[in-house]
Image (cartoon, rainbow, N blue to C red; front, side, top):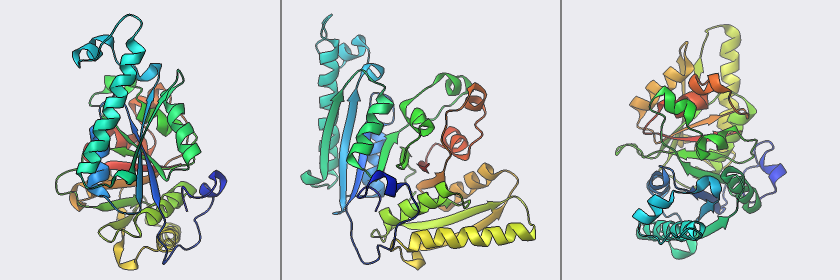
Length: 317
C-alpha cells in the first residue's frame, strides 16, 4: 500500500491484492508563491472530492527560494520592515494555508481530513518537500505548475514543480492544471511496460479502486507493426491490467486502447483532446535535463508538461 509501508516496499514491485479492503489515502499538497496553487486545490476537490478515506496535508516550505518580494508583501497588506521580511513571509504563508484549508472545508472536506504544515528553513524548497513526503509516507505529492508558453520561459524558468521531476524520488508526483469544465474523472494511463509505468498503474489502482466514478484508459502507442511489437503490446497490456485489478479496481472500469503513430506524444495529445480526460499518467526516468533538453524535451513527461494546458499529469519514477 503506497504510503502505508516503508519506503523500500513502496518503490518495489506492485503490491499484493487489496481487493475488499479500504485503506486511507494521504496526499501532500505543496503550496507556494508561484502560480498554480489554486489549480492544485481545485483539481483535488473536483477530481477526488471529500472522500472519507482521503487525508490532505497542506504544506508550505517558507525558505529563501520561495521568498516573495518585500514590495509584493507590502502590497498585500503585510507589515514589512528592514529586519522583518522573513516574519512577513511567514505571516503570508500562514494566511495562505488558512485560506486554502477553509476553501477545502467549503467544498465538503471534514476538518479532520485537512491538516496544514509550515516549514521555515534556508534549504532548497524542493528538498523540503521531498523530506516531508518521505517522512510522512504520503501516497503522492501534489503541485501546481504554469505551462511555459514560449521557448525563452522554458529555458529560464526553474520552477519547483519542474525540479521535482528531476529528482530521484520514490513517490508519485502530480502536476496540476485547471481542468476543462467537462473533463470528468477519467485517467489516461500511458503504458510502455517499464517499471515506472507499472508503478504508475499500481498507484492508480490503489488510489481509485474505491472511487467508482473514475475510469482508466490504458493506452499504448505502437511505432511499428512487426510481429514482435504485437507480442510486446500484449505483454504490456496484460501486466498493466493486472497491476490495476490486483488493487481492487473493477474490470469494467478499465479500458484499453492501442494507437499507431510515429510520434508518441502527438498521439497522446490527440487522445487527450477527444477523450474527456482529467489526468494523463506516465512513467519517467530520473535525472535533470541539460540546457538543450529544456528547449526540446526528450522525455514524454517533459514534452507533455511543456505542451498541455488543461490536463493534470501524474508521474512515477
